[in-house]
Image 1: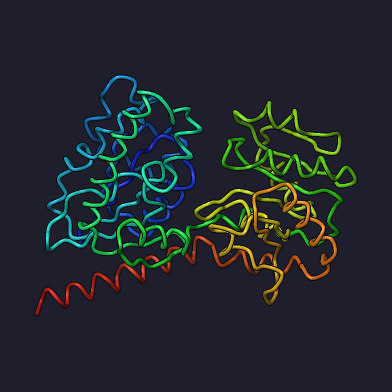
Image 2: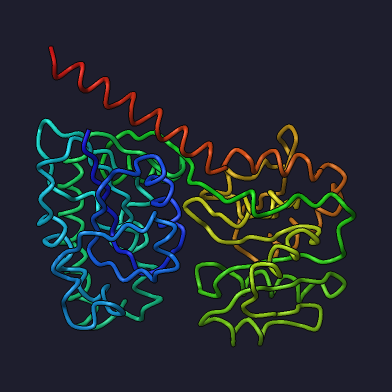
Length: 379
């Protein structure tokens, strides 16, 4: 069968692109399509050297750095791809990729990282963070997002089968599109995070881009109120100044660090602290792959990647609210029950999310769906 893979945009190699790379591993003969393709050569090797067929946005002014400014043009652009010669279309979508046009005899399977966050349930949060929640410009942006929502809902009818990257996103798909989905967790490169079973050192770790929704400032403020406990912060971003202002002497803000430093810190930390509400959340899985338990906010993907203290073979503590007191309480509960968390259990839990498992699950699900559909069409 002829296979086409559709991705929103190729600019950096982040979480969605890691999923794309594994989809290409399963279907190496597939043709690749994307709104824009400015991927550096070093990252293109991870996609088997594939270059994408691109849309009209590729040649528009400042598209390389300002491609998001063409959001209103993206629905039109994605619909211009001619996919009529393909039997199977796989879209890797967190924005508009799922909106490609397909025919009645083609199978379109969409792996959804999330419905368009800034157009649906996270609209108000994004508008506030962008300072677009008031004024004339805000009204124009809200009107634009309304049009995006209408298009996004309508084009869900063109998808034959939805795959979600977590049960949390599966619930979002149902809420937005009223469609069922199958969860296949995204691949995490657990083999690069080596199990460390020696005695942990006396510090906690958090690592992330320093942006508002990651809530690193919340973690820093909580530890600044626990001067006897040491916190290490790895990452850089626009919130760096605010985070440094909240940090007391027991909080070490290291900024961006190379991978080896991050991995070593994850191996040595007594626990990894995570306060964001993520669709899936890769770093808590990476920490567990190192044998390190996780203290995380109990919403979103963390509910599926961390075994709470009330489960068999626990790998962490989940706290209920994104507040300073909730973080402090969770850290204290962790220290009282530290003996329950073993490196072996953490590693075993993380291995559920290996690239090998992802490829096997995706391949089996797609071929099962394709063969079932072929059987129905032949009747």
